[in-house]
Amino acid sequence: MSTAEFEQSVVALEQEFSVPAQQGPVELEARDLSVWFNSRKVLEGVNLAFPKNTVTALIGPSGCGKSTFIRTLNRLHELLPGAALAGEVLYEGEDIYGPTKDPVHIRLSIGMVFQKPNPFPSMTIRGNVLSGLKLSGMKRSNHDEIVEQTLISAGLWNEVKDRLGHAAGELSGGQQQRLVIARALAVQPHVLLMDEPCSALDPASTLKIEETIRELSKDITIVIVTHNMQQAVRVADYTAFFLAAENEPGRVIEQGRTTEIFGNPQDQRTLDYVNGRFG
Amino acid sequence: MTTTFDPASLPSLEQQTKTRPWRQRTTKFDVSVAIAVAVPMMIVIGMFLFSDIPGALVLVIYLPLQMFASGCAAVATKGKRGILDSVIIVNAVGASIFTFVIIFSVLWSLVSKGLKALSIPFLTQNSTYISPSTPLEYGGMAHAALGTLIVVAISALIAVPIGIATAIYITEVRGKAVPYVRFFVQSMSGVPSVVAGLFILTTLILTGAINTSAFAGGLAYAVLMLPTVARTAEEVLRLVPDDLRTGALALGSTRARTVLQVVLPAAKTGIVTAIILGIARVIGETAPLLMTSGKNDATVANPFSDPISTLPVSIFENVAQPYPDAVTRAWGAALILMVLVAILFTVARLLGRNKIK
Ligand SMILES: Nc1ncnc2c1ncn2[C@@H]1O[C@H](COP(=O)(O)OP(=O)(O)OP(=O)(O)O)[C@@H](O)[C@H]1O
Ligand SMILES: [Mg+2]
Image (tube, chains in turn purple, red):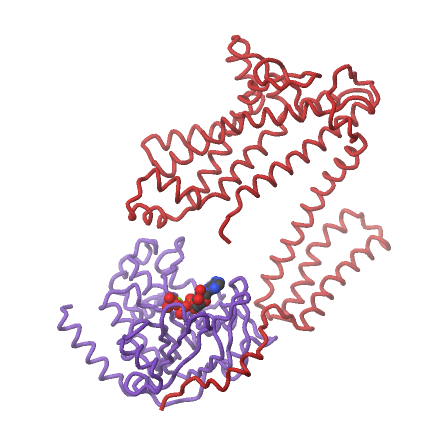
C-alpha cells in the first residue's frame, strides 16, 4: 500500500466513522474508582461510563494509570502484589467486585488484549485461537468456522491460512498481536479491553485492526488505550483524558465525545495534550 | 459538552478507604468449607472408633471422601466451574500434609534421639581416646563436623566453578561440542557414589599421588557434585530470556560481559539453588569418603596430610556398634549434620537474595 493510498483510506475511515453512535444503555461503568499499589495511590476518583456498543479511547501521558485502570475493569488488577482499590465497577448494573462475583465469569465476558503480544508458545496458531474456548470449558462444534472468522476479523487470515498448524512463536510481532486479538474474540466477549493494541503494528495492520474495532463495536463495547491521537479520532465515539500531576494520583481530567475532546476541549491541559504540546 | 474533573470532589475522595474485595469471603463460602472439612473428618473418626474396618483402609477412604465433600462445597459456592479447583486443592493440600508428616517424623526421630547426645563437650571435643563403649559424657564430634566442612568446601571450590562454566558453555557459548558435553554431564550424574570413591582411590591414592585426606574426599565429592551443579545451572540459564542477551549486545557489550553482568545476575537465585542442590547431593554421602578421607579420632586441619573424620563416616561407624551410647553418638552426629545443612542453606539463600526489591 502506498503512502497516498494509506492516507486516502485514513480519510475515508475518518469520514465514515466521525458520527458517534447513539448513546445506548451503559454497559460498564467505574464509579469513584481509586486504585493503590501498596500505599501509593495511582488513580483517584475515576468516574467513567461506557455505553453499550461504543468505542471509548483512553488517552494520556505515560504512567498516568491507563493500564492500571483498564485492568481493574476485568479484575486483573488484583493479581498484582500490593493491589487495592476503592469505589465500584458496575457491569450490567452490578458491582464486579461484589462478594458473590466470580472473577472467572467476569473475565469471560470482559476480554482483554495486552500491550505486548502474548501468544501461548506451546500451541499452534489454530490452537491459540481456540485456547480461550478450551481454557474456559466452552463447548463449540464449529471450530474451523470460529478460527476462520476471528482470524479474518483480526486481519490475519490471509497470512496464516496455510500454516494454521505451525507454532505461534514463528509469527512476527505484529502478526502475533493480531493472533491474540483473534484469540480474545473467539470467546465472544461482551466487552473488549485493549491496551495499546496497535503499538507493535505497521500502518496497514493498524488500519485493519481499526476497521475491526469499528466492525466489532456493532456488537460489543470496546475500551482502547492509545497513544495515537489520530487513532482515537478514527475509532472512538468517546474519549477520556487521564493525567497524573507530579506526585499525585492519576485522574480523568476531561471526558466526552471524541469530537468535543479534540475539537472543543474545556480544560487547557486537554487542549495542550491533544495538540501534542506536552506529554 | 465534555465533563471535566471536579476538584470539589477531592475532600470526599480523601475519605475513601482502600479495600481488597477479592480477599473477602462470603459467610456461605466459609460455612461450606467448614462443613466440607468437618463432615468427612467425622465420618472417618467414626469409622475408626465404631467399626472394624482397618485403620489403613479408613485412611484410604478419606481422600475420595474429602474430594467429594469439597466438590459439593464448590458446586454450592461457585457452581460446576469450582469442581476442578476443589479437586486440585484437596489433592495439593493432601499431598503436602502427607509430605509434611513424613518429613516431620524423620526430623522428630532425629531430634529426639540426637538431643540425648548433645552437650557442650559433644560439640567441642574430638574422639581421641574414645572407644565405642566410653560413656556419652566423654568425647565429641567437633573433629568430624570440621572434617565435613573442609571436605565439602574443597569439593564446592572445585565443582561449582567448573559446573557453572559447563553450563555457560552449553547455554551461552553454544559451541560445537555442546551435545557431547551434555551427554557426558548426563552420564556423570548416573555415577554411583561408591564408584566416585573408587575412582579417586585407584587413580590418585593407590598410585601415591595424594594421601588419604580431606583433599581426596573433596575430589570424590566433586565428581558427584559437578553434574548436579552443571545440569541445574544449565536449566536456570536457559530460563533467562534471550531478549536480555540481545538487549545487552545491542548496547555494545561483549559476550563475556553480557554473561557476567546481565545473564548471571538475572539467574542469581537459580545459580544459588544449583549450588545448594550440589551440596545437598554430596553432604551425606558416606561410601566415597570411607575410601578417600578415611577416619581419624584426632582433629585434623591440614587437608592434604592425614586421614580425617567426617560426620557421615562417624555416623556409619558408631551406628553399627553394639553399645547404646555409640548409637546415641551416631544420632547426635546426624543431628549436627542436619543443623549444619540448614545453616549452610540459609546462608546461601541470604547471599543469593535479590538486592533490588
Ligand atoms: N505492579 C505495579 N506495582 C507498583 N506500581 C505500579 C505497578 N504497575 C504500575 N505501577 C505504577 O502505577 C502507575 C500507572 O502505571 P500504568 O502502567 O497504569 O501507566 P500507563 O498510563 O498505562 O502508562 P503507559 O502509557 O506507559 O503504558 C505508574 O506510576 C506505575 O509506576
Ligand atoms: Mg500502559
